[in-house]
Image: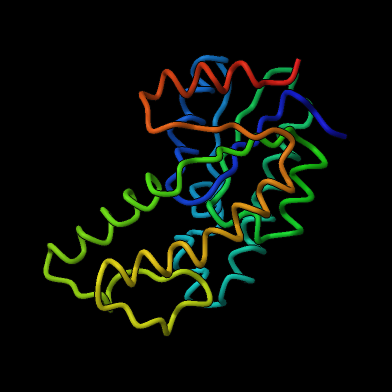
Amino acid sequence: MKSKKLLIIAGINHSGKTTLGRELSKTLHCDFFDTDLETERLTGKHPAIHTKEGGQVAYNREETNTAKFLVDNLKNQDTYTVISTGGGFCDNPEGWHFLKEHGYILWLNSDLETSFGRVAADAKKILDSGGTFEDVPRYPGYKDAKLESLEDFRKMFYEFITPQVQRYRELCDVEINVKNAPVQENLDFLLNKLPA
């Protein structure tokens, strides 16, 4: 049964899901869960390990199990709960439909260039610490992509993320256009979009 008190924060990588989810939970005085962190806690493995060992399908299965575990343990609560999903949750049909059936999905539609800047900053840290583009994580389906520059990385990012944006748009209950702005400004906008 769908609950307007179970708030699911979804969006691409580096769209602000965890930051805004935590701030939203503080404002609403409720629990906050991050499916990536909870999956790691429940399985003892980082999401990247699940993906490396069994591909995206393996991680999707574990993230779905985590979502079911959380909903099962929260179903009798009468207060708000905020759950932030992993960036690729739109590519996990079973998990997505399960959460949509039980909660209210708020999609953080972030500016892609801002999100790319955050991802590129992570890649730059690897490069600045002596790593090479071979050490920079790739998106599923791009494991063999040849990366020799940040421009190659940008191309991979946009090719992978652009279809995800369309899937999020089609699957969410409400779209939240987040800005490259102070957290409080985006939080205020998010609060105004919560279901009555």
